[in-house]
Length: 131
Image 1 (cartoon, rainbow, N blue to C red):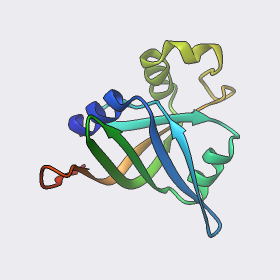
Image 2: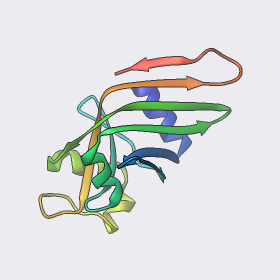
Image 3: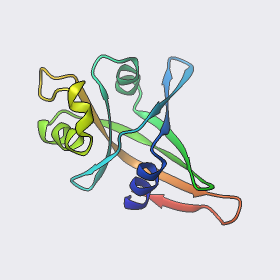
């Protein structure tokens, strides 16, 4: 999992794919954190992406970094705990201007469950990671 976190962190921007009905939706993201040995991402409550994840937690992420790319697939699970929200905003303090935590806040954090990742390149065999 740490290798996946490091890859996404180094890439800076990754692309998250969700499903809305029968239509794929892809958008750039940049938040990733490890909290209590789980890989987390963050978005805003009420955004379309949050609604899509809540409807169908199966997602994929893709990113490129230094000639390699990653494909991460798994199920995202909402974590409503303030501690998980705070950990994410501690990792990205610049987001505190836009996001607040707690039951009345607008931060939604999700962790990966049953995830698999492949780090690939044209120069080596895929590195497979499951967590």
